[in-house]
Amino acid sequence: MSNQKKSGAKKNATKKVAAAASEAKKSGTAFEHRGLTFKLPHPRNFPLQVLMTDDELVATQLILGEDQWAAYLGTGPDIEDFGELARKMSEAQGRDDESGN
Image (cartoon, rainbow, N blue to C red; front, side):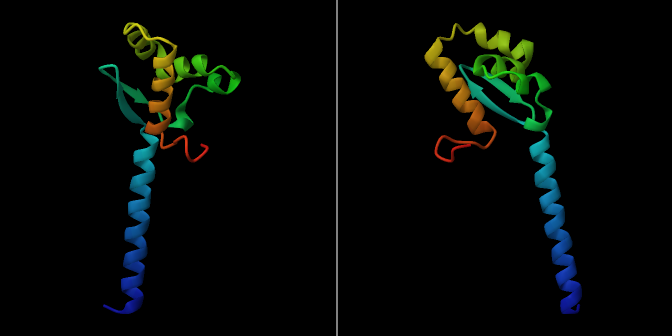
């Protein structure tokens, strides 16, 4: 096999891996908190209303959806626990406090 063919095959393989990784990210992610597993949509699939609020509590409720939000409230959370939930949501989406994202 020539070097040109090898290079082309390697580029195609790299593109396929990148496409698969991108598709996996679009599917969303999940994390556990208070004995529950929360499933988050990809940020591109968040409800549009998320952009219409500056309230972190409302945004979280919109992102989680009615059923997951009701399940979370059923655990009897307090304000400190909400902060922990928000942190875990952020980490599950690939953000952390150190990066400023």
